[in-house]
Structures are given as C-alpha cells and as structure tokens.
Image (tube, rainbow, N blue to C red):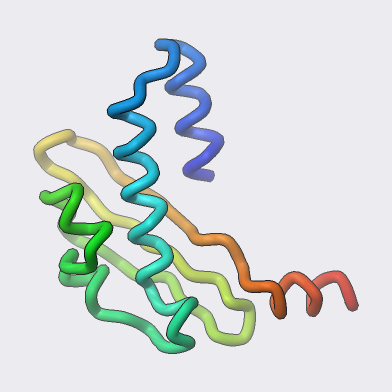
Length: 102
C-alpha cells in the first residue's frame, strides 16, 4: 500500500529525491518490526530504531507482526506533517515458498 500511495503522490508532483529518501526511511522502519529477528520489536513502537531516528515525530505507532505469515510492518501518526504512515516490509523467502506451495 505504501508503494501505491507513494507512486500516486510522486506521479502528481514529479520525482522528489528528498521525499523518496523519506519514504525509504519509513520502509526501513518496517523491517525493524520483528520479521528479521522472528520476534516483535519495541524499537519501532518506541520509534528508536536507526531508520526511525531519521524521521522523528512518529507517534501512536502500532506494530503488525505475525511469525507464521512473516507479515510485519507498522501504522503511525506524524503530527508535524499531519499524516498517517502505513508501511510493511517484504516477506522472507520461506513465506514466499509456502504461499507458492499452496
């Protein structure tokens, strides 16, 4: 969903490298939610992971993490920018193989 929303905004206003880097940071934060460590992480909830620190001001963060589907990401609110960010990381190779096997 993040990619679709990002592309929609960029298509209307042209490419903006600063905005692209900002979206990359939010996407990076989704990878801190637990999928790589196979357990939920508080660093995104607290907004203290390395990717999070690059984009301060996110509050009311809810982490989405499921070990059986390898789905992970977050939803949060940034008051300074008055926007809600929804970001999910990609799935691991084992999850992709599992889905293809079914």
